[in-house]
Image (cartoon, rainbow, N blue to C red; front, side):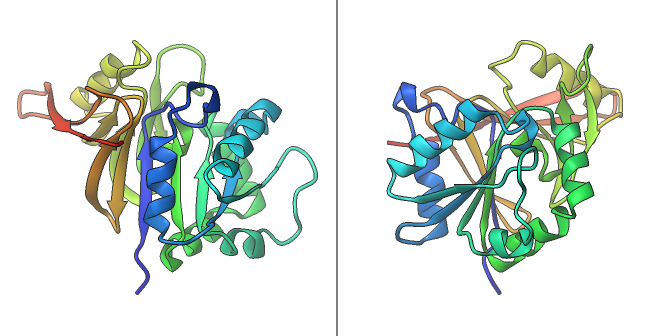
Length: 234
């Protein structure tokens, strides 16, 4: 059976100008291929051209073979052939709810599951992190951050940008404490949660001091946060 891997990142990737590509390098090593083929899916940003350019600049510098899948311009006819030809699928951030709706309409979700089951590494930050879990904390809708039902490849809930956006930590704890959201994992910016199958295999970070957190509801209905230390990547 192929090794099923997902690397869910809190944020802070695809910024070539900051010269910190440790998480991207880690992801490429996880796939175990020389000159891996990496597909970017920028749906959540509405196929933002600058985001796509940053992706190409980042992964080209890492001796990968980058490509992207557009849904707001001319979309390839055979999505399955394109996706299954890759070694890594990188999902960008943005509006998660809109992204999932577009994917459902185009029939991409079962293709992504097939890719995962075949051993193609799935990764991403923000929307590209929470999408793989049962549910996640989203800012897709204006106002307070809310719960969003996601793809369910991984169990439980997820919250990205835990230290990068001030609303994230209190929103996640509020939702878990109130029973609106299952217990789950949060990640600071620059932190990657590496799953093999449905089990958390490693926690890595490109930022000194950044960490992941397990947030659970106790019997008194209070959210309890446990810090999970991350291994700092070179």
